[in-house]
Figure 1 (cartoon, rainbow, N blue to C red):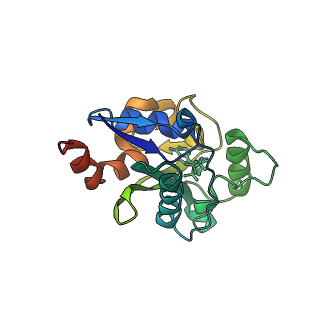
Figure 2 (cartoon, rainbow, N blue to C red):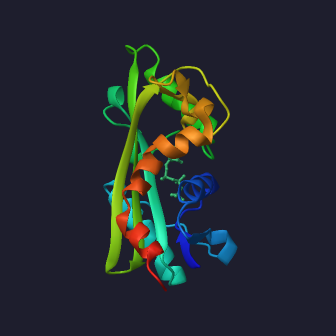
Length: 200
Ligand code: ITT
């Protein structure tokens, strides 16, 4: 079976990508399974550039086809912040997902509601330095002040999906893996689909 390396050190992403792509005849591995210690600095100016940068770094280290994902949350009232800085958003050293959510709420308290926000994901599938596919996905919602639900990761407990009346963390993986920014980006990754279905 064809094997693809997930170019991410975030185990939550690995779990979600594995579930989203479960219908494809490919085996996904994470860097730790190969003993890879690669942690590229995300210096790109866009999600695409960061995703490509991660894909190239993991491909260079492994020689394998790789699948990278760069994601972020853009809040309208904050001019699109935290965006590309979603992981490094909180000023607290060693900040957790919970700290990042609290910091985001603290930036919004007092501002008019609803606090519209959009998750973005740019996925890159790189087979070789010149054979690359990319796709972008988004999901719109609102940031809320209270934490609700225990599924997912990152900003999911405070990301409310109005059409469902629940946060992404309450909706859980069956919903998220069909409707998230990541699910939508991966659904558009035609090169991954065609390559996985080609005979060896
Ligand atoms: P890698 O770069 O190793 O893939 P990362 O966690 O740094 O892992 P990103 O830069 O793509 O990944 O994502 C930045 C942050 O955006 C991430 O740490 C979360 O806080 C948040 N985030 C991304 N995807 C999310 C999701 O599906 N649900 C909730 N928050 C998410």
